[in-house]
Amino acid sequence: MTYFIIIDGFILTIFKPMQTILVNLREKIKVLLMQDHNMLLLAAVIGFLAGLASTLFRRLIEFFGVIFSADGLAFIGVTGSTVPLLLPLMPMIGGIITGVICHFFPDAVKENGVHRVMHAVAMKAGKIRKRTLLTCSTTSALTIGSGGSAGREGPTVQIGSAVGSALGNMFHLSHERIQVLVGCGAAAGIAASFNAPLAGVLFALEIILTDFTIHTFSPIVVASVIGTATGRAMEGNEITFHVPVHELVSYSEIVFYLFLGLLCGVVSKLFTSVYFKAHDIFDKKVNLPKPLKPALGGLIVGFISILFPAVLGNGYEFMEKALNGELFWGLAFILIFLKIISTSATLGSGGLGGVFAPSLFIGAMLGSAYGTLVHAINPSFTASPETYALVGMGAVAGAVMQAPMTNILMLFELTNDYTIILPIMITCIVSAYTFRAFDKNSIYIQKLLKDGINIKHGREVSILNAIKVNDVLSKDVTSIPEGRPFRKILETISYSKNFYFPVVNGQGEMSGILSFHMVREMIFDEELGDLVVANDLKVESVMTLTPENNLNEAMEMFAKLDVEQLPVVRRDDPKRVIGMVNRGEVVAAYNREVLVSGFDR
Image (cartoon, rainbow, N blue to C red):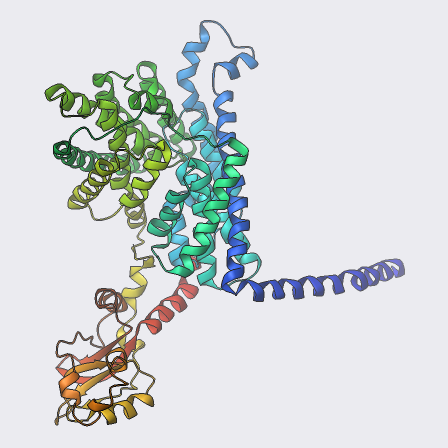
């Protein structure tokens, strides 16, 4: 016993000082990283790690692709006439393995997907579990590699975001900085996976963070560049699709692209409707043990692939055929609907993967079929069908994701073809707005809504709805009488913490408002000192809140007016100011509530 005490004392003597040193070192690093320029350094590290993880994930998909192929069957001794009979069963076998993994690791399903990253940013201060790196990459690679109809973009975003979250939490950074680092990981993952740095940046800003400030933009650009460089170092500087040169034959052809945009928007809505319907069917009407449901989805895809092998996997090979004019228009038309069914069956049954690649596939097939028709009608003034296939790719993906700008840039980077940027822009925008006529939310937001989570502008609406303006209003109001001269106004606001000042009449009723910015523009004009009064300067049209309004309504008004403060009035007396609400206080109240309830969801 004495020996154990001596050994324990020795260990404590050696390791406790080391632990103290490590803790102090981490705190010093944290202080350094709190500086913006050092955030760029951490963003570069995340870019490298996320780019590395993204590239390894692609290779894992390729590995499983070989395992679930004729070569894989030959490796275990299966050859001859039985191979064609077994290949359609590969998606089912992959589904069985995926189902078993998800049964023992249910969070592999719960935490998978772009919508879960959006949820983590809005509700969990950017915290993503590190085990997601393993569970997400393995199950998604199994689904895609075995032939399931899904894309790699969702898992790639999840993996990159997990890297960013892990590093941010390692140094105990603030929630806001961790959220930015999550965006850095997502951008680097997308950039490395598709060799598309610009699209990676916009994807993170437009979908994940919904924030375009310089403090978020700069680190994400750095991460995306480093992620792209890492991917190119490992895979080479190869574009995703090798396509011939496209062009806009005639400016009158824009009309045909407008109609293509309308069609893409309608087909995008069809895709999302079937996608969610498949989820409902497998959840409520398929009476199978949950681990076997992905196997059924894989079996459906396998049967379809007997006659139409294009539906397997991400479909990049057949997309390239459409982009090079090597696909019959009738087959392309049929594949639109078969890919919708296959993707819905794969993901609705419990398979894991993204919807970006299937969206590109559906758009390419739609564009190819539509382009053939248009070109046959007027061959002299229209481009070839493969040009319409290229434009359709971005239009469907842009509508499904409700991120047209991301897809305009991504389409350019995937093909390295700038010659038809005008048709791509107009078609993507029209498609996105056509989709919005049916549903205002992207497929990611719709998935969250199905789970009872309503995220808007990067925040959980239900939390904002639950907090009233009365809970955050400040009763420190600096009112300015209508007749007060400009010189006295300057004295008044110099002692106030506010930025907006209600102008009141003799009865104390608000008749307008002054802002610090309005006054600042005239501060050096000495002639105004006694000539101008508050009544001459006020803005008469004032938007107000009542104590009964919720913070969601307040945030909507802040965004609409682009102001930092709003006056609060009594509901029964809308001209009587009782307090002011700051945008910062609204955000702080939301963040406090997230800390309390976010991790329980």
